[in-house]
Image 1 (cartoon, rainbow, N blue to C red):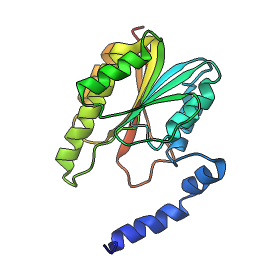
Image 2: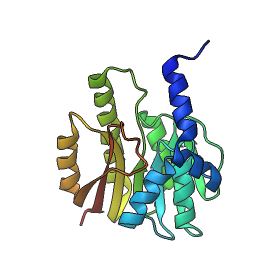
Image 3: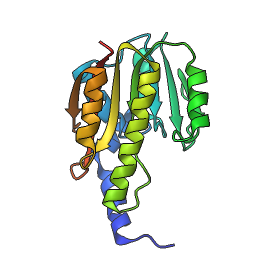
Image 4: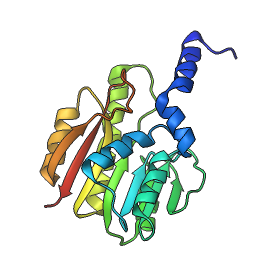
Amino acid sequence: MARSRSSHRWIEAHEKDSYVLRAREAGFRSRAVYKLSEIDQRDHLLKPGMTVIDLGAAPGGWSQYAAKKVAPQGKVFALDILSMEPLPGVEFLLGDFQEESVLAELLALVDKRRVGLVISDMAPNMSGVRAVDQARSMGLSELALDLAHQVLAPGGALLIKVFQGEGIESLTRELRSGFQRVQVRKPKASRPHSRELYLLARGYGV
């Protein structure tokens, strides 16, 4: 099937993207690593020995970065509906986070570890209908928050991707009820036209 003009333009832009080029040169799996690294450098989220859960992990850029930062004693548990090549220090679970059985399997893997950080770069499969996509995105964010309530140690943090639109204010209120502070981050590596933002909630249960 022939590619559309828009997909050709996207591919051309992607190949020239400075973050794509940097990621390839540094051996990272995706340009998204620079979103996490910028936030981490600003907010000092990842520390040696920490246990991290990475939701929506494939192809593994965030897990790759996080595993290096928490090594050698730390551990990253990564989950995605798409398969992911193995990474040192990362235990990967293939499955749909929206399914109860997959959540139960993830909780069993984490067991009694004190989780210091939950990170989520999850996004729904976009339908092109903005209201539908926004609702799906907020649903994923709520699930990430529910998981955080189950696994985070006191003082832990949650970083989740959201899209500007309906539901952000109510989610922010929910976060503020369980965390000491909530901040909005828009990394430079986010594409300029993207509506994506990251909500950073810190000081769980404090």
